[in-house]
Structure formats: structure tokens, C-alpha cells
Length: 211
Image (spheres, helix red, strand yellow):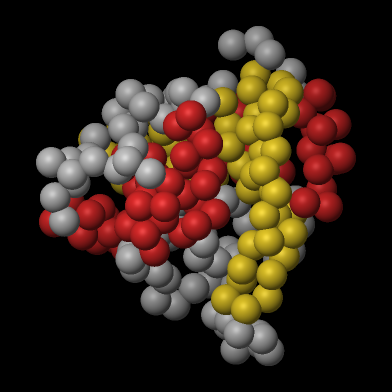
């Protein structure tokens, strides 16, 4: 049985996973960067938020965050997306990882709109749409995540950090950690003019004050 012993090894494995075939513009289906994903998952692991936990990967896309959590000891991961094709890619990626000798925890695939979920988990990991196509979609995801788990890791544009601080306070939670990244958005759609466009993105760890 293979084991993940370092953040760099985790990033290498995640970099070999399948991406989107035909990403959808309105859903902002940009692929999670493997090094950034590995960094956040590793930090969550060090904080005790991964090992033996039930994790919900909201808007999971191709499953990078959830698979990363499984690779370093999550007990169970719920992969949730409204796009069936994305979930199928996530399933294929899990099969690929298992074929390479890694033993993973249990998985469940849920094809459903985020707002209709009635599930519970220990921790949510999510890279939601940033709200550039559907306004405030990122906040919609965050509200849903806070109903599911007492600990939430969520990616947002860095420029919204002050708003998220106020949002957190109004929703009986606190932001305990913030990690800032230059997130690479690779040329995916026909309207893109640059091969890679980097945006300032932060991953924030939210914790409920009253569990």
C-alpha cells in the first residue's frame, strides 16, 4: 500500500488527474491547480481537518480536492456536483489513483444542485465559482457549506476578504486562517487571449462559533 509522505508528492499525483473535457463557461469550470490544491489540503491535514474525517467536496468538478483528502487519510469523501460529466471524470480519477496502488477511504457521488443538499460532514472543501458569471454564486456556495459542516475551506477572490470577514461574523463563524495564491487560469475557452492568466485568490478556513 502506497502512502503520501509529503506535500510535493501529493501535488505530483494530483497533477496527473484528468481535467474537464468541455468546461462550461457559466459554471466557471476552471481546473484546480495541483500545487495550490495540495498546499491547502496539506495545511488542512496539519490542522487535523482531514485524517479520519468525512469530507464534502462541493462543486467537486474533476475531484482534485476530494481525492487529495482521500490520499492523506480522509475516512469518507462526498463528491457533489450538478454536472454528471464532471462526476464521471472524478470517478475515473479515483479509479486511476487506486490502480496506482493507493488505498482510499469510501466515496459517494451526488449529482444535485448545491442548494438542495441535505447532508452533513465534518469538513467542507470547495473551490466555488467566483461569481463572475452568476453574481454572488461564491456566497451561495459558502452559505450552503456552512450548513453542512462546522469547518469550511473555501477559495475566493482575494479582493473579497474584507467582505468575507463581515459575512463570517454575521453567520456565527470566524476566519481562522487565510492562504493567498496567484491562481493560474489556463486558456480554456475561445474568448481567452492569454495562455495563462493569474488572479489573486485566497483560501479561507471558516470555523463555526456555535456547533
